[in-house]
Image (cartoon, rainbow, N blue to C red; front, side, top):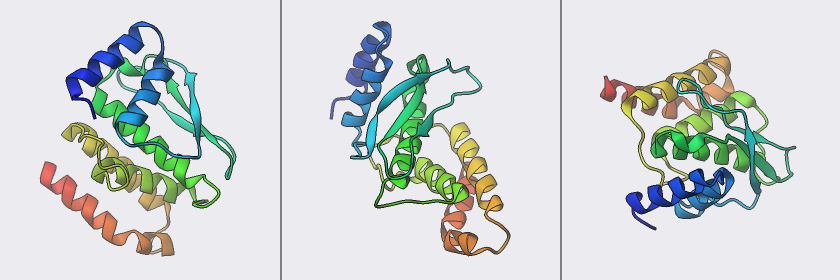
Length: 170
């Protein structure tokens, strides 16, 4: 893997040329995010400093696209990598072999990955501010699973991990 300064230089070149999708593909290769169910990137509206939206789209069992803002690489690389990793978790969840049908479970798994990088260990840590934000989002989806539900029980140990992480950041 190239060094972070080298990666940033390459990403900035892609960005200057308006080749955001190619920058994303480069990062997928550099950070071990490849998935056989990933079809490619397509664009969506520009991100704002307070709102960056990426989505994974495609029918379950079919190849998935990730929609990312054309200006994605105007934001910190660690944040964008974590957001792409989140979407790649969804790519896995929507593959024929690994279907996770419950949206709350899908989102819990994706936010958990952003905090602990168990599927994609090469993804860098993001800021404590973003970790707290991602943890809050994870807790939202955990709550939506239903108090005492089978899904909440399934993820109770992970919830404790997230709570301990948040406590360590405070």
